Image (cartoon, rainbow, N blue to C red; front, side):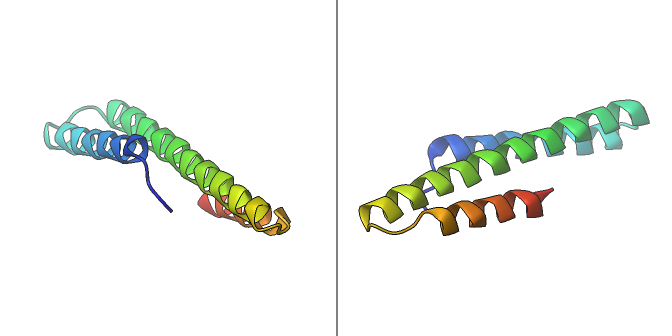
Length: 86
């Protein structure tokens, strides 16, 4: 799969968020603030997973259609990846 610059940028932002949380911990920020930021990181990870799975599914369906194959298997695999990520 070809990973777009958008996908890579999302992960770089996530990396920055995690570094920010570590800095908060080193500065002994309040637990509530750290947990709030970790929740934001988790949400961003979930959105990134959704984007990657969606783009992969789109590519698989286009490929299957071009080859005259059934797309059901690609759809089922995408659903399994999403369920597994939860």
